[in-house]
Image: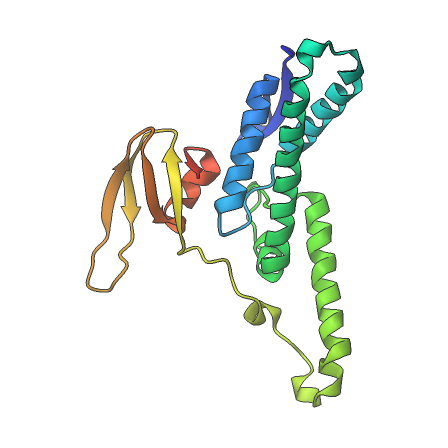
Length: 220
């Protein structure tokens, strides 16, 4: 397949920005998003547009499989692999939302204008409904049977935050200079490192979170 696809990104100064990708480049972006989502300790920026574009292409390819020759049957394996990537990405995002829902919704509430959202519209609805159902469940099962002063629960305190201090493996896609690394103990001092293209590192997630968002590094 050699067709070219249009993908609309966000540009902070000019609004919508059209990005032209081949199907192979689109699949690569999906796999990168899946890997990052899989290994990041927090919910990352929503890639719903990439997922929707891939699904559209997959549905088209499935419709034409009946016309394939025997030599092209191997393409079905590629389609199945891509479907698994799509489903795995969606499943991982759902798990992250269920695990950290009050913090994700609070982050969304305080998100500055123009900053990419970590939730698609559908995920935002799911997170809100999940929080409402959780509060209703707590109230019906336990809180209504407790003294009036104990009939409220602070979900922001009850649900743990994403552990941004956890360590992750990464591969550097674009050389980075003067990355500030915070000390692990009080007696240590801040220091800076350079990340060479192609190198691999084990490093604290919050140190390189902006590089994950920009695509300069890939979690592995």
